[in-house]
Length: 120
Image (cartoon, rainbow, N blue to C red):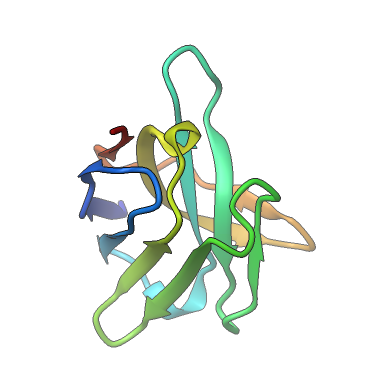
């Protein structure tokens, strides 16, 4: 079973930055694509960004140019650098280890998430 532990969330003003981390254990981390999702109150969970095992990255249109996903296979950690944050980025953020075949397919294991609140 894969264990995922997200951290780095918090309260930030609009225009600010945060860096989320997700530490992964229990898997051959480097072999898998990793994704960041978010879920705002009353909304469905959505894919924000993912990075393949070959470091190819893809972003949702709403965050493209503002967020950057990266991975450190030695540390078994995936990161999400979030810049120019907006109030609509407020959500609980989750990481996921998935599968990739032209698109990203999430697997069933999820962490507890980390809350990001963007507000003045």
